[in-house]
Amino acid sequence: MREIICEELKKRLGHIRIVDVRTPEEFTGELGHIHNSELITLGPDLESFLKEQSREQEIVFVCRSGARSGQTTLLSEELGYVNTYNLVGGMLRWNELGYAKER
Image (cartoon, rainbow, N blue to C red; front, side, top):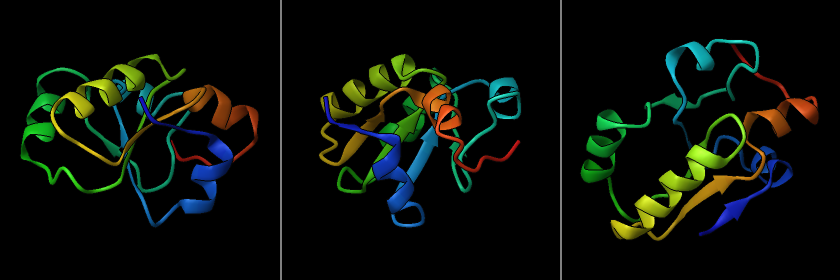
């Protein structure tokens, strides 16, 4: 599984697609979400998304800690994606570093 650290993602904001796999409540909750990230909740919505997208695009998957997004990254690789990444530490780490977020 390919991973990306928060520091690297911050440098690449605006040049890489960010998909947040948490619940709507988490997306707008205390930890917030990364600017321009898309909420596509783990489950049927995410499965449909992965079946419809180009396997070549760069996507970073994000969740609270990196566990659910890690599962998603593995699933995307099984489906033939070649440029997907798991955000190490998820939104917990993003907040710990004090990076900008939205709610």
